[in-house]
Image (cartoon, rainbow, N blue to C red):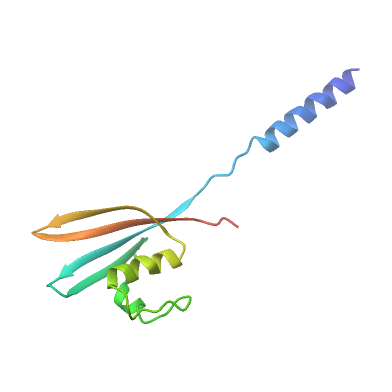
Length: 114
């Protein structure tokens, strides 16, 4: 009887420990920044963190998933680019820097831990 109780206790503890572990979601974040330079020019930068920065104009010539880059506004094009890369838009806001408004768009995507 003692062996049965001990085995039962061990089985209960083992299953509790195994099934009580939950998946922890981790995310990657990126900030897309738009700064208007004059009436018709704009600079779009993508900040990924850890010093990784990309200027969107350099990326624009690389078609992804056969998306046409000819008919889009550069901002819409950049937002679509981030969506194709798997990022979801989480927030957007404008910052006034010395009379120039800089728009920032915060993106997030789930990191795969394999």
